Image 1 (cartoon, rainbow, N blue to C red):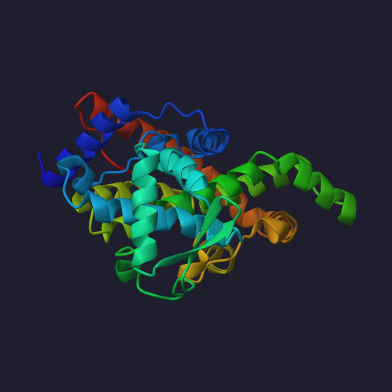
Image 2 (image 1 turned 90 degrees about the vertical axis):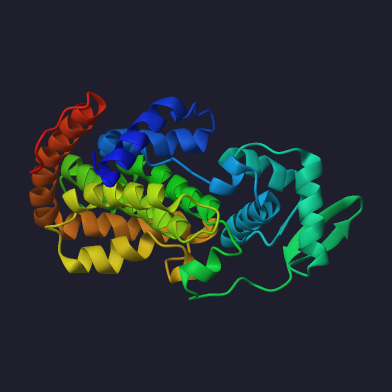
Length: 314
């Protein structure tokens, strides 16, 4: 078996062992989208492999990296200062839980290094970036300091909430403009958002490849598998839809993506997405037809891999 095939087999086997027992309501939403929209990667997209954690080396730097990534996630939401308790809560949402004392230790170390500073409100200490994170920096250098997992999964969560509110936003559009096939527009709206979510997951994985703590070969294979799912759902779409909307909305602001702060996110974003679902309806109709056939084929390939047999690709 080739090295790539071996890694793919490990990913599938690992996914069976590590299938998320998802209880967080936001993660449940994202998982439901992926299960419905791209079931061929539904048990793979969430996998996180950190060599340092597994081998118990450089774990201090790993904890700092993750804590800064959590504070970055809040920063993208317009929340510039966070407490130890908030960091602790978010840490166990995204990573293996660590003790509160460990969280406090590394927050204080980051303060001593002048990466963070504190403000107090009575007995509560708030941690704040000493300087705003850099913009338009190469991902390799960015991931030396920040874990990007919380920011990307949080972004996927926000788009997942739109996916399941499709009926409401399409009805608002029809009420305003007085025309439109609701069933068709809902389908197209959800297809666009599903593709954005896949690209968010892909962008997360591609950044993890450059992380000093990661199992790079595992992430490279995972990226390849997500890329196949994306290509199956985008290769006949026009560049105006892919480049001007989907690409931009699937990236975080640090890397020149759309800023989706909560206060302005839903209203402006949904109008743009619904208009695109209407304007590009013929392109989407053809893409969805093609994608449906490919999805069935990919699921057969995954089943064959699980059974250690082979099925030729398209």
